[in-house]
Length: 142
Image 1 (tube, one colour):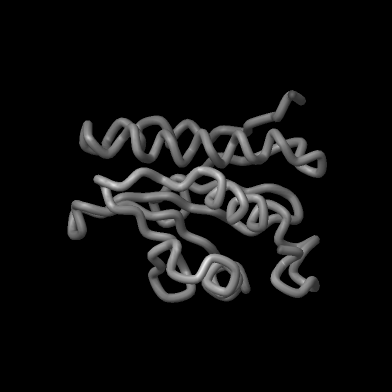
Image 2 (spheres, helix red, strand yellow):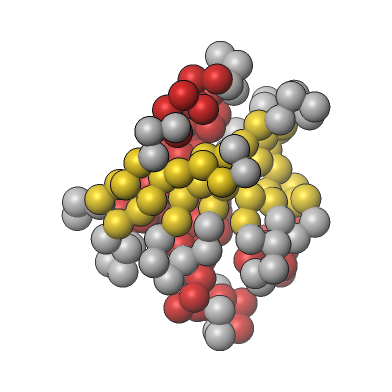
């Protein structure tokens, strides 16, 4: 596996530490899945891990930002957010139908008790990390 350079904002770790103990492992899992997927893509050499809107966010060249977060007002769910003006969530709905639970055209939602469908979510992450290279393709190359 290639070496991926992770440019990490020092504010990210305190944000992860601020999540409740039952939430932190869930968001750590999503973070690791994003980084693992980036490592598997030849076109991605470097990823930026930062905070956008106070949420852990992941950016790569030629990709679309991915954010992850949990909100106290909806304590039994957490989410992976995508740029709402992109075709990403619309494409996920087209490809996966009701397999995932969505929030409009901006997020995939996860229930705390459910297991995250790793293979399918990695495909969504892959599309986001390569978005600007895929956006002209029908169904983003899926």
